[in-house]
Image (cartoon, rainbow, N blue to C red; front, side, top):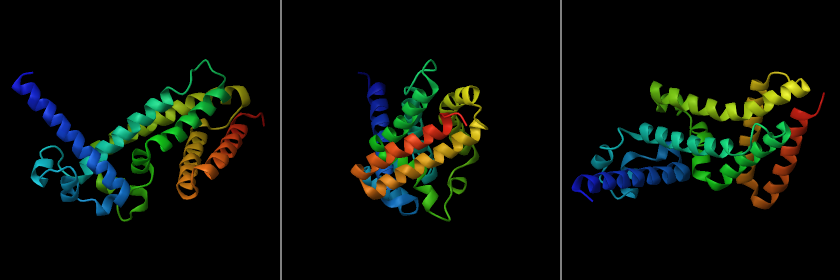
Length: 207
């Protein structure tokens, strides 16, 4: 390995250490309480070194949002095939969303909970316009995967306004995961199964 290759590998390892430290701190302590010096300490770096990789806390948060959405898109994208029955495909998408919340709780909270519960902070105040544009594109990509199943349901069962239905189901599933955080796995499994059945019946049973 050349000197240049070794330096690049070390640089990437340091960058990943910074992101891992930030992800854990945002998850545990929230956005306001997580400072750049605190992230640097957790990553065993000087704050000045961290700034060589990220210009500030907002940029770190934005990067974690993108990483989280990429993992969620991967889960949803692998959840079913367009050739599946629409109800089966939607069921698998719901399972994939809930499975993502279980397997990646730090990313899930950073996407859906951390900034939303920390007024006066908002994504609009923490991120720049380019970051917000990228974030909206990721959100739209996730919802588009769900919309495909619902659009097929619209053709089959005259479902009204699939886009609004996707937004409604999306919000309900986020609320369901919040319930999981409060009740624990055993209660959540029962409630999640019931919630999924209600959602599928509402979307796919002929009216």
